[in-house]
Image (tube, rainbow, N blue to C red; front, side, top):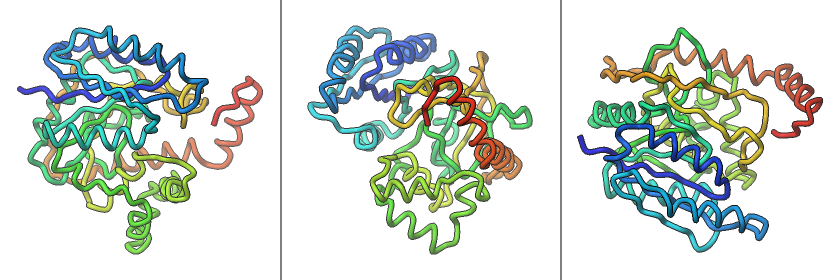
Length: 303
């Protein structure tokens, strides 16, 4: 097997960056995987020291098949960085694995991702591989297909990335015209449509909501996991879009996760209901109000 390149996007979090790289190196496949590191430039002078510390560290990394470092000379922001990096490398290699600096991967993450990218490479209705599960629902199978794309530890192919539409206005118009907003929002239980509206209004700069909507509108599915191979450490207030609350904690699965071709290629409706229930339980008015009160009492003023 030719291993997919790993794209790692870093900025100003040296400890997070060390953690994700260390966890990748615990994967046997790291030694056969090309690593591309995209290091963004400071947005403000306050970030200069941390950005430079990250850059010094990434130049010391070894243990991968090859390491290519792309240091931005100005601040691109995460969305522009990811869109450009994924587009460049997926056009070169045909497939990619994508990570941000606030993730920790399990020891069999790379094996799973490469197996999945190989197994589903010709399945036109599968366009995304997602290796994180935060529902912790025991009823989920090891792998399942769902019409939703998570952005923590993911992979895709050139054929699928061609569906990416960066125009949020056009995506929203199609969702509304086709009366799909409620389904897009997991039966109204999570405000993905509102996230898209905020992206259009410039209130966030999410590439992920546009990728989610792009594949959703194309009726393309994601292969997801029922046992998490990703842990997100960014909910410590260090990220641009991440606050406290512990909503998306996950336990790393420490064993191989087998990849089998699911047939027929269709959405797992039971899995979708798991997500609907999870989002309802964690995002209803009272759940959010109680969380906010608890966090305030603890002195955690994150989102």
